[in-house]
Length: 349
Image (cartoon, rainbow, N blue to C red; front, side):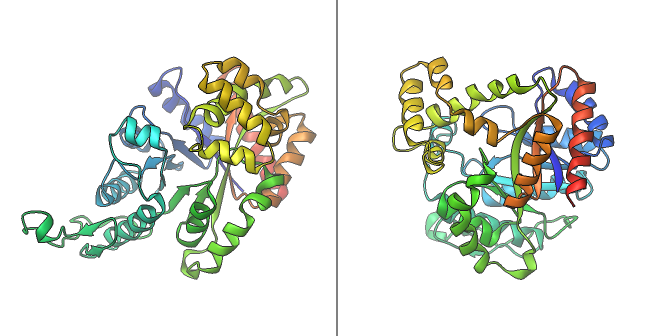
């Protein structure tokens, strides 16, 4: 099981990247850089590539709407180049609020677009002349849709790898099925190992049944807050505001993927209450309604014995890369947590 970590630079981006060298020495395998509607992730990942040596770098995630498919492919090839083959392209559909609100692009056909984008990216990385006649993307652009001067081109540079790993963030049944069929990795959010098979098992099985054997096994990337000790239970509360934001506020009534997931986990009543309160502006009350069971089972927070049990449950459910958020009072403490969980994961082998 690989150990990853999301980049959190609340204290300063350059300072955080300087600290990544210590995490690298502690055994951290991969760092994921978010984008959402903050600073772009690409410039930050390029900076990280220059400041690290072994650490893998992943976009977590780039949305599929605000860049053309070939721009995504160029970006991935460029990041793989400056990192000497250490890049993972993480993509996802995001949601209507961000895509239509921040980018001004219609939120349409996320599944079809994801499939075509991955196909186009792989053509670019293989240095094929990019010709694609899909429902959502046509390359070159047909004459009747432009000047008629478009040509089928191949990327000028020789990419470091023709098979840059592609990870897809997905939680809906069809999205997960598609991911298991065509992607190298899958990143769900709010991962509860005990409920994973019930919620996603059928979709994963359907996708894997159509999977090309040359892709190898699907890398399953789970997320979990991490704190180890006899007095860390209170850290579970740190997860409440974020869970409430996603379950309650990341979408409208009937169009919130994270709310749907909470319902599929069995928290129908709580999901409705959280959403009603959050959309009514009562964020603290919404956070208070986040089920304690959800916070506990999607985290690695507790005594060493408890964390070992939760880690084993994660692995048993299929997790192959664990993306942790270490919680400690200082940098030294966070380094110690990465070292500890890295050893715990090795002990499970």
